[in-house]
Image (cartoon, rainbow, N blue to C red):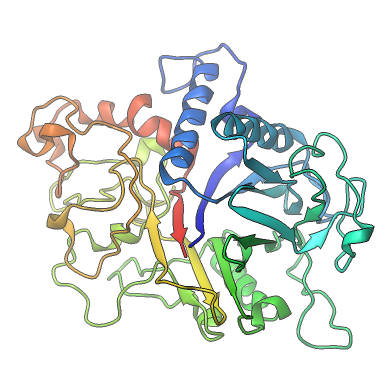
Length: 430
């Protein structure tokens, strides 16, 4: 089984983890420098506790360049290299696929453990800053330029791919995703058992029309439409910007239908059948998106109970609750998936897996991967539900807990977590 940790780390660049500024960080009593160190520690803890073979970071900032497939630059470049250095301090086997621009000022960072998987491409680097040339043979591959020349094992000049032929034409032209749209980002690995782990990382447009068109365009890629090959595990993962559950009644939107029609399985998917009644915390078990600090709450209000695990910190800046927009879809050829796949939403606010039975009405994905809660819910010991540091099934009302707002919004609690990213990571084992 190969362990993959995916995370959209909002606006990732060097200042996210190494900010030299000594001015005070807003919402914190410390400096910007101290805040960035806290974020790095928090990111690092995800790696040490989940122990992935592959760690994928979406939303890596880079200067605008519409020539997709060239090497990342700017703050994203220095941030990726700094994170690689930190990971290698934890274990020297960590490597980094030199990040390429996928579009719209973004690259993708793919870290991997070279003692567990072998990076195979699917492309080979052709020298300079790129772009890549699909089909370039291994004997023709060239070394990456500095500062990317020491990111891969010695002699490995493999490269990611960001341009994809369609299924029609001789030869078929590349699929046109549109101006400035971030393309899928393909990386391939061999695991210790000889399986091909074929990963397509996505960051769809942040609107329904664009995200829907993006997914439909993906189905016209030959690499996506093809059936699973022998010993292949194919993953399509990332931020799809498509809502999994309807806001009104938490029913499934079937938003991934274009891919499931091709045989892909949705890892974070509601169980089919009647909806639970009452719903309790149902939708929050699927949530992956987080509200800004000033609009997040962990307490109940009149006619608005806050249920574990998402309370009212999950959602978006427009106020929509329990937004689930990240996912992992998988397709396996013969021998590609030796055991049942597992997916866990990694949640530092309440911890993972989701173990509170009192908020689960049935049919909720609890996950299997352990991750320790980042904050202590016994914040003041003023309520029996918050004794022993455990998150409550139903949060007490704010009127009963004066001071909870300041506590929850504080840097050491939700503030640091939300400053790291507006997304929760996903952990896939398959």
